[in-house]
Length: 91
Image (cartoon, rainbow, N blue to C red; front, side, top):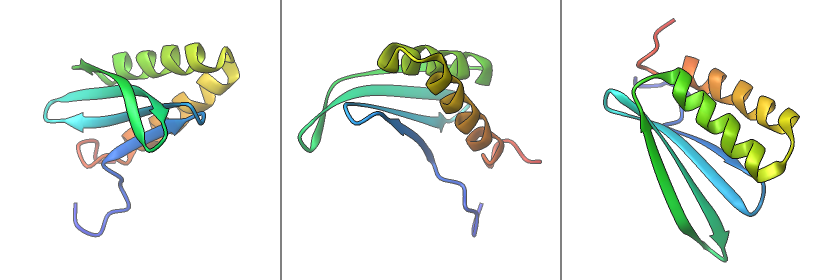
């Protein structure tokens, strides 16, 4: 969508762990890696057909990274706003 403010990647980080989410064709993908200097190590990627599963995975990953359900809920809220701005989800 030309001229859109939509970012192709959702990003969350607590300084050590970085999580990215993106739309990949007809699926949603989420990746998690550990920051080591200027690179990411031990990167893992999951793919989902539904937004609901993507949201659930982000909640789990952030809760594991922070041991804080409020931080996980805040990340989910941000992700849901990002999803709504996706060109694949017209308002």
